[in-house]
Length: 311
Image 1 (cartoon, one colour):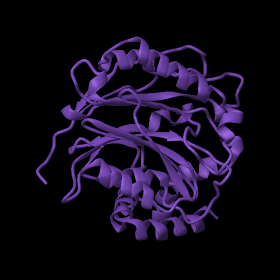
Image 2 (tube, rainbow, N blue to C red):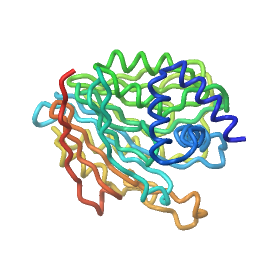
Image 3 (cartoon, one colour):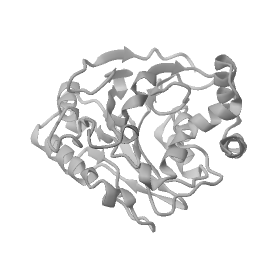
Image 4 (tube, one colour):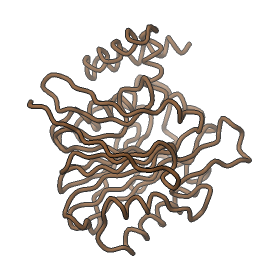
């Protein structure tokens, strides 16, 4: 049954961008597994959120424009919260394709798109969103939309990519490039755009813009609201920001365990225990990503410098 649905995913993805299917095929060939299995893996967001009982409180993202940073740079950052059992499968990789910027992606093994940035200075952060309009259907997988957006040479092109994708599920993407940022709340049938306020954008897991659908996340995980309020408070109370002050914000434990730095809830069944698996901070003008392997409160940030290639 999953393979049959994966065949539909491959069809709609090929219409969206045949090059993405070629990348999936490369992963399948390299791993020695079926293409349909890789397609289903890259559509795991849709499969996971198809059941509202599987919802997990996940991810806090932010963008800071040069007016809000000490060195006049643009910072895009997020905590990525997900099932604790996924942690060993996380990795950082660089993708290169002819005629496109180099891309640095922090992702899960076998998934070709996620949060990251490219050699043209474009960055993408991601948040789960869920609406009453979500349903399994002919939808370009969220992670493939991320991958194509990251191949863009500018924010305008990335925004067009997101808005044009066929969509049966909701998701949120924070796009940023030197001096500019926009948040896209995408849902079946449309999208809302949110702009920075006083040089900053923050998003968690509930809709902030207008949507015709109901929002199950608000009812099941109200910590999405408290994380948003807390992040905005920390941003406003610390003046101009740097990589280090953003790292401190992402390590915040107010509301533990479902805080900005998320820790497992032992009362939850093992399959529903979530935590901050990685924290990423991107300085877009410098082509630099700082990232952790594990919660930022207990893990050192590693530094990765993307080497841009000529286009």
